[in-house]
Length: 335
Image (cartoon, rainbow, N blue to C red):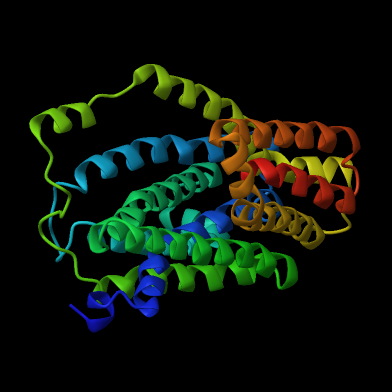
């Protein structure tokens, strides 16, 4: 074990945050680029793009649940979480590189269907992100003591990951999506494969020993509350996922950009604003409000503001500037 891990230095917390940052960056690339590149480079219509997008989350649902269940119980390649971080990171980087090369992959394999290859790439990318999603967070709990050190680990992770997520959209807006793709593939690969070599996992989970009664209580699921949460989040994610998939069609139909590059820039800046608000708001605005009115009311208010933002986009979001302003409103719910 390295001294930085023994002493829980700032450099260790930063290192520990990189795998989660890699997966967040990969997700940002997917959101910013997937619909844009499928439409502008490969000529898929919006209905076909919707089908491609649908394949990924379906795989992700199963992938995240399965990996979450088994990663507590396995040990290989010198770790419990590290193998899934490595596998997911390498796969995600490869699929990001595949995005601008779907036509070449189709020609090489002789499949004769861009749609089939696009679905396979999107599915694998989403699966890769979800393979690593839980392990990148669980490893923080595994290698930090309970209490302030663990909270500090998650705070570092959220800060660094949030910053890089905003940076991804800034790169797409300023330099361009193709640079974002190749730069992002390298970043995702390095942030996924380097940290595991400097983090030592314990073969035994150091969770607190519980009495039989405490253990039984910890295993009881409050299904009523859980289903309410699923129901609420399910409806909010309909709006969010629709935005991810169809924002390109809305921009093309309502704003008529002069070029494909301008379309990509509008998308990137829109998500840059959304994520910047989501990055800044929790610590500086929402946390003080939460202390006064509680988490449930705060969450309800934020989602309601987000819904108003979506309706406003539909009604008056006809120019890039109005779109950016209203995406800031939507960002309140995203936070």
